[in-house]
Length: 158
Image: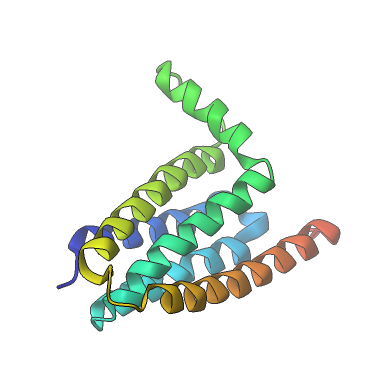
């Protein structure tokens, strides 16, 4: 049975990335691309491919969190989160959305891991599902990194 909370988290993450593409227009294509993996997770849940949806729900947000950590994005996210905890308005909407996406990503990893453990632990398909999902996410993230590198290397002038 499909877990509606995970579908809701995937939809929320997809919408946040689409909204981020509005606030960070220089990287529109990258943020649009980031939202597509969550659409895939939603479609897999809809077609009852829970095993793959849950594993992608663990690996994809974790991959995004690792990329964000490597690029130093959490410094700005931490500053915006501190402003929110002191009842101050965020001064950069894209960073504020980054905080929300980070929290939703952590929740997605946790919920998918719990559902995976309940439904598929001990079936003998965990390693193969992880390796295939990991390969998909690595390829997906490499395309995103390439586009980001091209955008930074040759910025669009307008």
